[in-house]
Length: 75
Image (tube, rainbow, N blue to C red):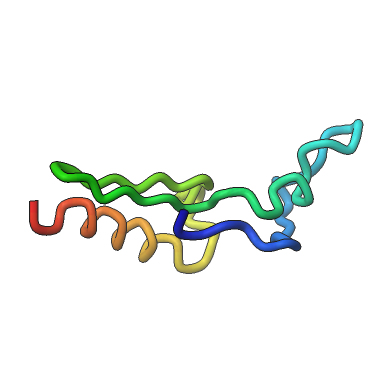
């Protein structure tokens, strides 16, 4: 686990709870956001968000680029 959502995740307009109050930002608090694995023959990165969604989140292109370069480095 490389990164988790904070205790009070940033609220965006498209992350709203259901009418019953479930599934909002509070449900994501502490959940995994980035996980990497460096195996003997391969590397992988899993991102638990949509980092390229409409180029909305600041700095996400760099995050994806680093993940792509790291997974292919030295292989």
